[in-house]
Amino acid sequence: MKKTGLISALMAAAALMLITTAGHAKTFKMAIGDAQGGTQWALAQEFTKLFTEKAGSKYKISLFPNGQLGSEQDTINDASMGTLDFSLLAVNNITPFSPTVGVLTMPYVIQSLDDAVKLTHGAVGKELVENTIRDAGVRIVGWAYSGFRVLTNSKRPVETLEDLKGLVIRVPKNEIMIATYQAWGINPSPMAWSETFTALQQKVVDGQDNPFITVSAMKFYEVQKYITTIRYIFSLEPLIISESVFQSQKPEIKKAILDAGMEATLHSEQYLRNTEDSIKKDLVAKGMVISAPADGEKEWIEKATSAVWPKYYDKVGGKAKVDEILKVLGR
Ligand code: MLT
Image (cartoon, helix red, strand yellow):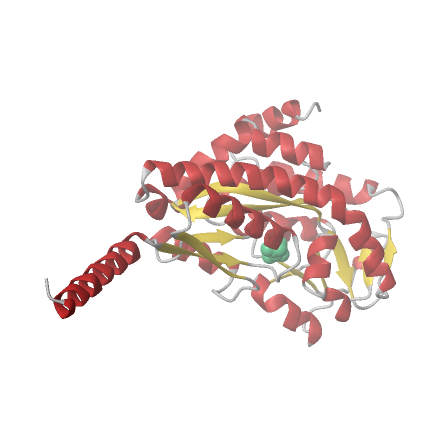
């Protein structure tokens, strides 16, 4: 072969290799509701590292934090249609699409990180994964644990339900959470997560609830002063993948996704255990004032459980399901 012929042949082979490699390369998109720095971000980074190690370097994941790809609820629709691969969001924003997941947002059902771990790793978690695939076309492949949702506001210390009166509190568009605030005597303002910082900044609302770690990641300390350490919901943040995207992967890639999800979940538990206290101290250093419910939360618990549980038993799978969960949790 002449020299020019050889060069042409080599160039053609290189071009073919590029096309073949590009054909197999895949960059998944992952929407993340929170800003960088919280438990969602930590889980996303860990999952990405583990998944790309397992799946090989042709597979990549691009992360889009801070609601860049739309509100958390929009991302479920997109994943359900297969136009988005992954989303990392709060469990309360899945409930409208798959009501039985609401059992995890029933006030005061989950009372500790250990409870949250037990439920997500056990039969209850597995059943919710199946229900979410069936109802919403998305598969939960991992969980971030973020801690209890504490109440923040810009106006005054809140220690009693009386103190809460007159405050405008943003809640997610989640019926159970809305009903909980109603049981506490106020009508909250349902609003997408992606609009919350601006609404707090512009004083359209006075407060909201989310874990310490999220308050910090979202820089809410810039627009909120007071924290009340209520413990009505333990915030779980599932990592979901579009079921149609999942099913279109080769078996070894499906396995890499599931294994990376499980390992990243274990990492998330340790991340919360290692960081929550220092984040709380940092929020105080930044000027936030922390109070506890004056009566050890007794009135809050009584009002919420007596009004909300009976109203939502049927939606979350029946009273027997809630009783079964309480039994799993040793109550
Ligand atoms: C919400 O309040 O809508 C969510 O909990 C926000 C989040 O994803 O952290």
